[in-house]
Length: 446
Image 1 (cartoon, rainbow, N blue to C red):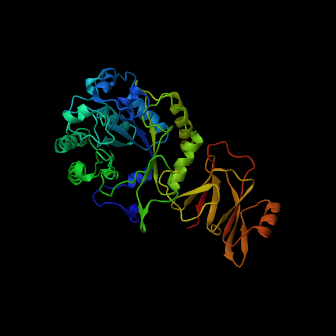
Image 2: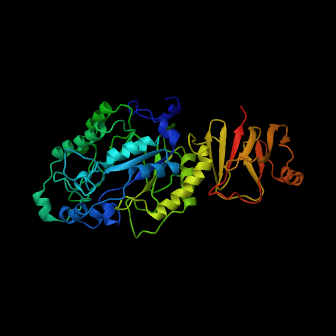
Image 3: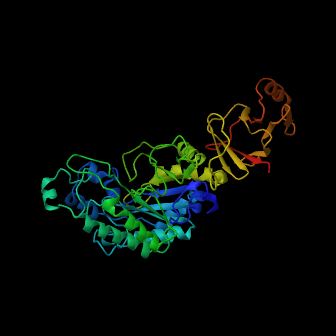
């Protein structure tokens, strides 16, 4: 685990080096809420009780779902790992669980989607993750709280006092199934703990309710190489900030944390038919770059529709992001934060002696980078491997070395007025490369 020696990571949570190498993951939110098509929390947002929600189960038929197509599209878009919602808060299982009848194999689909997903994504060489909700609004023993869809239904509350001991036993049993019946699972993504919530007539749930330490012990006994996220209320695992961009690395003192930014394409996790707040391909790409430049992964979500297909807008966005990744993947995979400070409106990612400058805004002709002078052996645009020329100050009594035949006029102007010790002066083509975000690769001297 040499790569993570400067990171805070539990000794017994497997080795996250594959995770930090892959950097770009696909989140797939799919369930009965896909049929409602108006947010994955529709059950509680509209306070639809179990009986009212039954229509989605009765009519659920993702007849066009092909996990092999999902996997091929994921690979083409540049994703290296995926996380599927095996069970969301609605309590509906996407596998053939023996512990409940509320499962996909009892719908018109009639098959075990988790099995098909694991096999298909493995076949494409992607790491496999499963999302599992600690919450279950369908289970009669799950104690009603302020998030529960029946929170204002006095009759339901009187008839369902809740038995968290019984529920937790059931929940642990379902996790055991997922980690026993489907081979190696690389990543288990829990959602979520909220022990600090207090609605007056009810409180949230956390580690004591889930019996998190017991659950964690069971998970690691079944799959010792698995990695876990940080939502068991135990203060460890992959950090998972969602729907916002951090302004710095995630750190605990001098130790960096292993983390991933969880982002949606349009603000909703599940399929949301009428939501048109789509991020552009350029924005998605910049979010990915920004995250990696701060030492994190990005887990980008899609919500297949109720027939099991990706909608046209999702395909369009991921198609363009995938093309950028085809050309620029080496500036993302295996990269992390750099010790160098990027110039304004740009980001650095770095992998060993390969330093990548992602230009969010294309400068006119020249770009000055401080503290990089004397350190560069070669520079090129990543999209076509075309040479980029530069001058660098090596800090030797003002001695400056030009790279080949850099334009004399540019040299004269910038060395006189703007050049600083230990700086690098890059000359750029006037025309911006026709890619979402241009990237310059600096090969550093040994």
